[in-house]
Length: 75
Image (cartoon, rainbow, N blue to C red; front, side):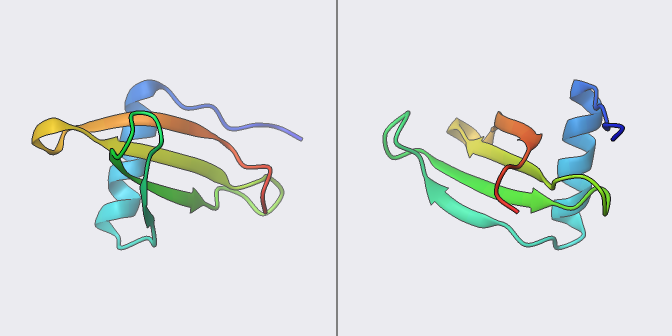
Protein backbone atom coordinates (compact mmCIF):
# COMPACT_ATOMS: atom_id res chain seq x y z
CA UNK A 1 0.00 0.00 0.00
CA UNK A 2 1.66 3.28 -1.03
CA UNK A 3 1.99 5.97 1.61
CA UNK A 4 1.58 9.69 1.43
CA UNK A 5 4.49 11.84 2.51
CA UNK A 6 4.34 15.43 3.70
CA UNK A 7 7.01 18.05 4.02
CA UNK A 8 6.84 20.18 7.16
CA UNK A 9 5.35 23.04 5.13
CA UNK A 10 2.89 20.66 3.45
CA UNK A 11 1.73 19.27 6.80
CA UNK A 12 1.04 22.78 8.14
CA UNK A 13 -0.74 23.69 4.91
CA UNK A 14 -3.00 20.63 5.21
CA UNK A 15 -3.80 21.43 8.86
CA UNK A 16 -4.61 25.07 8.05
CA UNK A 17 -6.73 24.05 5.05
CA UNK A 18 -8.78 21.56 7.09
CA UNK A 19 -9.35 24.04 9.93
CA UNK A 20 -10.35 26.80 7.50
CA UNK A 21 -12.80 24.38 5.85
CA UNK A 22 -14.46 23.67 9.20
CA UNK A 23 -13.13 20.14 9.70
CA UNK A 24 -14.11 18.80 13.12
CA UNK A 25 -11.52 18.84 15.87
CA UNK A 26 -11.46 18.09 19.59
CA UNK A 27 -10.06 20.47 22.18
CA UNK A 28 -7.98 18.68 24.82
CA UNK A 29 -5.75 19.51 27.76
CA UNK A 30 -2.25 18.06 27.63
CA UNK A 31 -0.56 16.32 30.53
CA UNK A 32 2.86 17.42 29.20
CA UNK A 33 3.21 20.31 29.54
CA UNK A 34 0.59 20.09 32.26
CA UNK A 35 -2.59 22.01 31.48
CA UNK A 36 -1.56 23.19 28.00
CA UNK A 37 -4.45 23.46 25.52
CA UNK A 38 -4.32 21.55 22.26
CA UNK A 39 -6.55 20.27 19.51
CA UNK A 40 -6.67 16.91 17.77
CA UNK A 41 -8.11 15.87 14.42
CA UNK A 42 -8.44 12.71 12.38
CA UNK A 43 -8.03 13.48 8.69
CA UNK A 44 -9.14 11.04 6.00
CA UNK A 45 -6.53 11.03 3.24
CA UNK A 46 -7.40 7.95 1.20
CA UNK A 47 -9.97 5.17 1.35
CA UNK A 48 -7.17 2.58 1.53
CA UNK A 49 -4.99 4.25 4.21
CA UNK A 50 -5.51 4.90 7.88
CA UNK A 51 -6.53 8.43 8.78
CA UNK A 52 -3.92 10.98 9.78
CA UNK A 53 -3.86 11.83 13.48
CA UNK A 54 -2.94 15.47 14.13
CA UNK A 55 -2.28 17.10 17.51
CA UNK A 56 -1.43 20.80 17.73
CA UNK A 57 -0.59 22.48 21.04
CA UNK A 58 -1.74 26.08 21.46
CA UNK A 59 1.29 27.88 22.88
CA UNK A 60 1.82 31.37 24.23
CA UNK A 61 0.34 34.16 22.08
CA UNK A 62 -1.76 31.46 20.33
CA UNK A 63 1.31 30.06 18.57
CA UNK A 64 0.70 26.60 17.05
CA UNK A 65 3.15 23.90 18.11
CA UNK A 66 3.02 20.63 16.17
CA UNK A 67 2.91 17.63 18.51
CA UNK A 68 1.70 14.70 16.37
CA UNK A 69 1.23 14.07 12.66
CA UNK A 70 1.06 10.38 11.78
CA UNK A 71 -1.22 7.64 10.49
CA UNK A 72 -3.70 6.61 13.14
CA UNK A 73 -3.98 3.12 14.57
CA UNK A 74 -7.48 3.99 15.87
CA UNK A 75 -9.89 3.88 12.91
